[in-house]
Image (cartoon, rainbow, N blue to C red; front, side, top):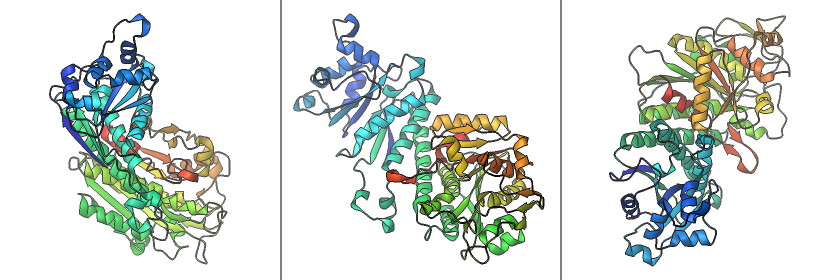
Length: 534
């Protein structure tokens, strides 16, 4: 999918009601489909609602250029004021007489945008998805999207968020694993959609913001696609070694500085908790460090840490066989961090960002950790392993100790950590844990901006009681009650030297059933967080 911008200097951007000159300019542009938004007020003015005797406004002006096509659609009931309703108008011979080169015009209703409750990104997302669905799956190869006609607010920041969201959804819709990974292609249903080019139209007043928003959205989509690919690949291909090679490959394509530590280096660092998980597998562990130096020299970096269990059998505490194949997705935290680092490098973000990925398999074998084993973490704390299937926190705790050396401004770890988070939040929000109010607010805001949302859960000291051990500093589980909370509490013991937040993405990283596949979350959340962070 390609995204571009087209600037029409004379186009009216101050109102969703387009002037005739603006419409003529847009309609004379050669495109498979011109996409325009209209409001309930536009519809009422055109349909003669509320006692109006004459048709006025944008739809009336459009109807004149399209030789009555809008009026015909209204008469037959194809045009209405319901939010996210669509009306596709196809070119007729009479259009050409008026200089119309667009083969189609797609009208999309925004609803009553005069109401404050209607001017939200959640509402806008419904409109955007409806429009993008109408554009895909058919013979349309390219479209011209007139951005100002969709603006729920003329605030530049809000328009930029809208554009990024459209690119995000279009990229998400265009993603096809079998097409992106030819060696994995399996059925004809993987045939690519013909809709491959979306151009955002604006004028000089918003040219700079529009271009930046599209570039940011494209970079975000590239990161999401990479994260999805890594998550969807089978575990016999996407191993810890493979993740290391992917990261190193990114350093050749971008300005990322990548270092991959092997078994001996991990042992030398004293990462006993990480190694206790890795030793059960024949596949060696990797510890990946990716640096994006876009900020000032010496500026404290934001550090992202991603859980990279490329397959989780549960170890000696073996998982049930049903749906165990989905445990290839237990590295989606790592995939999202790698994807985010790719995004920030593509957009040349002017901040220092470091991505850290501890990655290994969790397998049962004669060398695997046993319930009751005690290991020593890099921090020096001892951990009693009561359940080997609570392994994510064991590899993360050493990574969280390792990142102290960077003197970070903040650290965010991302992990498919607990099934308990799915019970608590389902598949809508990712779980957010932090005692830093500033980080909580920033991540929550970024979640709303990308519609990759989070929900804060507690970290009260009382929950730490469940992690007490008679034989070590801490146990790796705290029992069934508040399982996602006690997992976060465990991690918090290794983050006392910096500001920290934990994202549990167990319910949001992938879908199962007929829609089975990686979602690419929380790449949009993390990218928006980094973009907006001051």
